[in-house]
Length: 241
Ligand SMILES: *Cc1c(COP(=O)(O)O)cnc(C)c1O
Image (cartoon, rainbow, N blue to C red):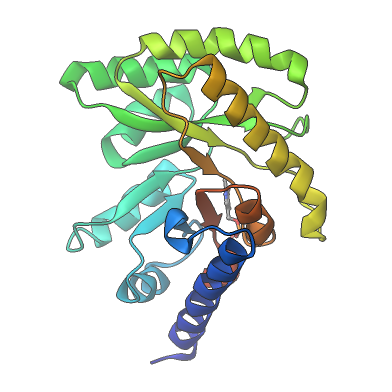
């Protein structure tokens, strides 16, 4: 085994242990948390090493880059591909064709596009609603950093509800980066509060998933209720960007 493969193996084991410990620290079971390994900017050899360890949930940000990798990996049939990056409406069809789940549904316009392509073949698409809980202008997602914005979001969710080929599963966020993960905690709490608010307003819909937490802050995210963490560099090492 090469150095790189050894490192990925060690990193993967270590991250699983850390997920376990973070879950235990708040009385949760590690099995209630899904690890999506973010493979954007990583070469195919490293991804194969990861798959050899049993990982099957992969996160990608760019549809063309992901499509190339998928071509190399057709022999492994049970990979779940998660789109986690911003999707331009004109790429919606390709994303819907290639991915199993979209974390980054960030506008009604995109939702309408997905609904249109999905209805043509009647295959539905699991999606998470991406919310901007920090107010940073560099972030995508529905404005949700202030509770006064939540009513507007509800109006849009009423529209999403009509799109029968979109299976809304929950919420996703990208908080600001801080060196100290404790600084991110309030943003994770805000997304969880929003989820609880939506559970009450739309009890007929599913709000089970909270996709939050990355390499620098996933333990705090788990303590605040994450059901999906998206971890790249802590497992795969630095990216080629
Ligand atoms: C790149 C990326 C990640 C992973 O980031 P790391 O810091 O490498 O863990 C997670 N989520 C999204 C949306 C990303 O774009």
